[in-house]
Image (cartoon, rainbow over all chains, first blue to last red; front, side):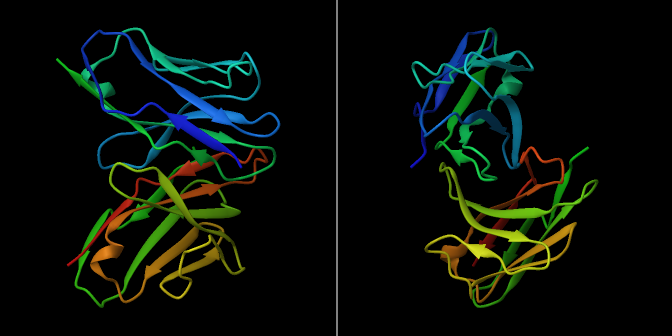
Length: 112
Length: 116
């Protein structure tokens, strides 16, 4: 079945540091890939997505590129802010399914 | 657009009581709604999928009689936790898909349930 593996957190960074959160997946066919962000006490918000190989999703300074050859969708940001502190979930959705498969989430803590 | 709300945002109840959580799509018609449960530092676990006017489809291991789901209209689904126990304490999140055809899910802000 489909699965998503994320690096374990927490990831702790200083403000303005470079961020990478690794995500790899296993799926049949050509899934769509997503990053969601969950701020403390809130539900999930879609951060960015990519629907086919080599697509780059981007939003709010975050980027992720759909790499079919390495089955990866790593999240990056060049300069993090304290306000980026949250839990980040990588997810995939196969074919016509409504239902994403989520990774376990990676907590990001950014210190001033 | 595509806003999903949940009410209440948090609730504390005594063991043995029932709690109802509402999920509403505010600016679109939700053909399908989903209920998830999230344990601390864990991913989301899909509990059930519901379509308006029909019975919910529960995931394996989720007790239908304990977690009652009603999807009475295209903008409202409710989850009732019956005879709640402390182990039911969790963060419950709903999501909804609309009629756009791209299957994108829009998530509610979640409800924190604490059972004493």
